[in-house]
Length: 162
Image (cartoon, rainbow, N blue to C red; front, side, top):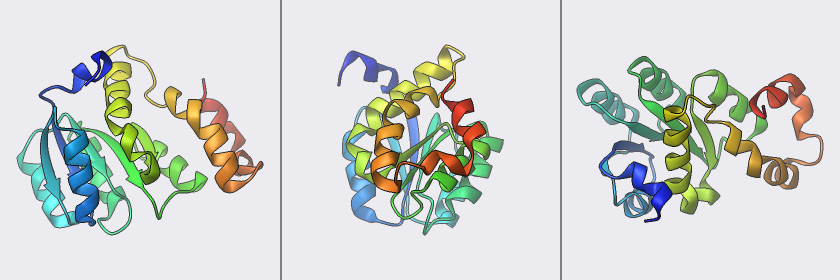
């Protein structure tokens, strides 16, 4: 664990995914945290309603991630969306607009501790949690979706990059 990730030490994190191997990987990476795993919407909803969490890492597909995001936001839990199948500029915008603190493709799962630490650090300083997203998203999205990926909502992309 590096100094930046020290901010995660002892944080309680709910991780939700219908793929058990993803949950195991996240649990290993987030070993400095108190991790609670859920494999379904119902299980995650129960956990969100009965426990207090510092962070939630939510899959979108298979577990009704946007409905869980709504619950997390209402309970003031900082939520990060982690997805493979719902990876698109449109889902990125939807995640932001619905209150997610960040949006992570599953192929960046190895960076999740650094990302979560950055989100908590930005929140602590009263800054946008989305600013670091644009550091890697521009080139990543251009490679994945083509050079015109930002044209679906130019104002949105300008807004989160400031």
